Amino acid sequence: MYCKHCGKELSEDAFMCPACGAPVGQTLKKKADAQNCERHGSALACVGFFLSLTAFITGVILGAFLLAYDADSVLALISGFITFLPGMAGIALGIYCLNKTKDNAFAKVLSTTGIVLAMLALVFAFIAICICFSVSIPSIY
Image (cartoon, rainbow, N blue to C red; front, top):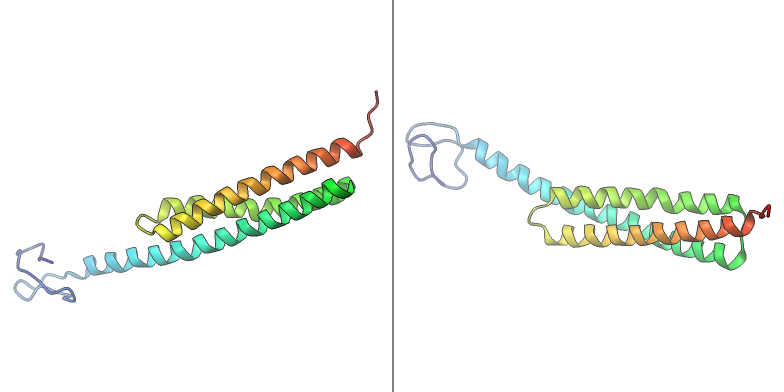
């Protein structure tokens, strides 16, 4: 690392240039902020993945229950919300983490997997609810 003002070589842990006295703490602070952002990106990616996994599990289980037992429309709406809320939160966190993490491959894989799981859960729950409503609503014709 070199001083921006005089060009003298500095050690990595220097807070000021020994030659001209210029502060170099801003570059160290930016490095620390970037590392914190990467760590928080990994944590948010994990949270988003587990929300998506929750939506996937509830969507598949409740969707299969709705299709197998021909449940009423109130139960279909409740199961839809149980799947919809964590699914949308997982998608939102996944997209946020994909945009924020630049070099963190682990966070990118978790985010992408979470987005795909949540989308599959939402599609499956939507199909199950549509089938449940079409069966439970009597036709007037």
